[in-house]
Structure formats: structure tokens, C-alpha cells
Image: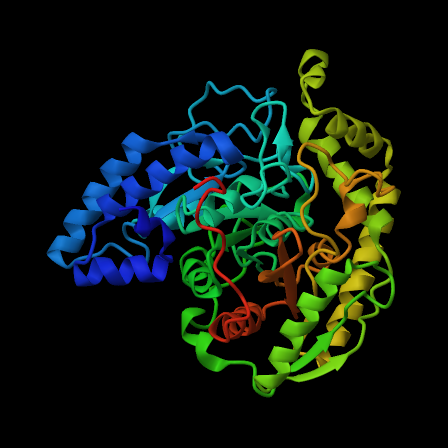
Length: 469
């Protein structure tokens, strides 16, 4: 039973098809793993075991009849507690959200999973309203790293990353407004994709506006492509959702990287100080892309540091999402969130529009860059996981989480697809991530290149077992 938690969704489905195991067995195994890891890493805000087993039994019967409901029938999945899941409160990591309510609607991505027969085993942790790059909140406490529980899992989709890394379901839905699927994927040694904005519809609309994306967090790129084939379709509730993709992402995985023009930017033109172990691991992976037939050049995009503009957009969104709270509710907020909300409320409409201008110019420059480069490769982060329970590494001199995430948030501003691929570990055994970025709407290229790294053995599948086992 335990070995089922170490299988990808693709492999689970193949086993269902061949009768090697059943959705009920896989769901029980995932639930048992979730319960086992919870005391160590705190990945979940709630488990939905009764409902999950009921859905698994229904799936098992469909597979017995040879009539699976969809592409993910019977696969255990988890959902970040930012996204609506029918029948379960969505508290967004906040004591200020009242758990009493109807909770009778699914977010678009969750609805697509339900239509395809996926089995929801639980909601995963998030910092309050997903506001920062680590996962701790007044509501659910600190989420810890699967490789070293004294370290952070990253954020804001840290619970999802820890759950996938330790085998509590092969698939999870996360959200990413400045790196929030890629940061924890890098720290926890899994794969995550921030799709092109609008490719995965979002409802309710995020207060952080068009910075916020929904994306897959998975064991590997093939599972992410499969998940994108399910969730990457429009929903009438999202006015900014894109039209359906031209084809299945899974069909394009085998294309490889031969002939692709890859730009490798190790430090964004000297703007970022990257830890040597991280730099070495990413460079080795880039060299492998060249061996696989990619045309690799070391060059930098025209990516002038946009952090102040990002802060204007991000802090304004935080102020907007909390503006309805009364004085007592505000006292319940994470102190760091309270601080950025106060700052965000001071910005004028002209300040906001000036930040939008910076964003549009950044998008224009990256569009030009991709006229001559199919992919951009960078480290996902310049560091590996640091102490849990703090927003920034001690002694770093950074004030906010954006100080140590310079490779991630710019691509939320440009709305481009970007993924984190695990490509090694440091001397402490902590995972290192490589980031792949493509032009808007070229999610297929990101998935193709990531899959090539997995096929070549450069990328690994995650920890899968608690550190004490």
C-alpha cells in the first residue's frame, strides 16, 4: 500500500487501467501518508477523508466497468486553501475569515478536477491570503520542509509542495502571484508551473489582480502536462480566461529540446548574488540541455529590477483584500501582512498606474527577448531553504520576501509561463531549482524542456518519505 504514494498520477492511472491497484487503495494510501506527515511538516489545514473515500469508491466502480469519467479519475489531489472547494471552508490562512458559510461552489480549476473524477483528499496550508514567500500563518502555524523540518517549505503554496514531495497525493493546485508555486517547488524538490496568465481561469478574482495565477504542483512535468490538460480551459466566471489551448499538452512532451534557442542567465546580468552550489547545479543542467541539442547562449534579458513597481501592485492588492475588516479582525492578522496593507493603502491611483506602466514596459522587453530566444533559464531562487518561521533569512539584510526571490516575481508582472524543475541539492541535502521561462502562450515549450530534463535524469521526483522513516 505504501508504495502507491510514490507513484506519479500517470503511473497510477496506468495501474487502474491494468487492474494492478484501485482508486480506493491509492486514496487510502494517500490519506495515511497525509496523516503521517502532518505532525512533522504541517502541510494540511484539513483532510476530507470521508468524502475522498466515497469518491474513490465511485471511481473504482467506473474503472471496473471500463468507463472512467475523465483524465484523472481516481487520482488523489490536494488543493491550496486559497481556492474554493465545495463543501469545505476556504479560510485563506486567516483567523479573520468566518468558517461558517455556504461553501457551495468550486473554483474553476477545482470544478474541472471534479468533472474528471479526481479525488480531493484535503486543503493545504498557505500564509494569510497568500501574501508572502514562506508558509506560516496565525491560523495554521508553520509549514516545514520535507528535507529538514527546521527549514521552511517556502510559499505561499508551501503546504501543497510538502504534500506532493512526501507522497500525500501526486497532484496539487497552487496559486502564484510572485513565485508562490515555484518558490516552494524549488525548496521542496518538486515540479511546479506558473502558466501563462489566463490559461487556468480563476474565480473569485484575486485582489492581487492579474499578478495571480493558478498552477499545477506535481512530481514531474508529465503529471503537470496531464493536469494542465484538465484545468487549462476557460470558465465563464473569469472574464480574463484564455480560449482553449490548440492541443493537448501531454501530446507535445516528446518534442525534446533539439533546436530550441535557450538563453541562460545565471545572475540576471549581475543583479543577483547566487549561492555557489545553486549556480553549479543549474549550470550542469543547462549543459545537459546543450548536450540534448538545444542552442544555448549565456545572455541576460533587459530586466531592470522592478521590485518597487511590484510592491506597489502587491501591497495595494493586500490592502484591497483586507479593507472590509474591522479593527478587531485586523488585530488577528499576520503582523507583516498588516504592515504591507498599511503601506498599500497609502498609494494613490497615479502610483498604481505608474507601476502598471513599468509592468507594461517590462512585458514589452521580454516579448522582444523571446523573438530571438525560445526559452530563458535561470535559477529558481539564489538560495536553498532557510529557517522556518521567518519571512527572510536571518542576517540577509532583506526587509521583505521579494529580496530573496528576484528570479520569480518579475514573470508574474509579464504574465509569462515559468516553471521550477529540481536539478540537484546542496551540501545539506536541500533541493535546488532551475527556472524555465517562455513567451506568453508557450506553456508547451516550458513543459517540453522540463520533461526532457526528467527523461535525461537531470531532474528528480522528490523526497517521497518523511525524514524520520
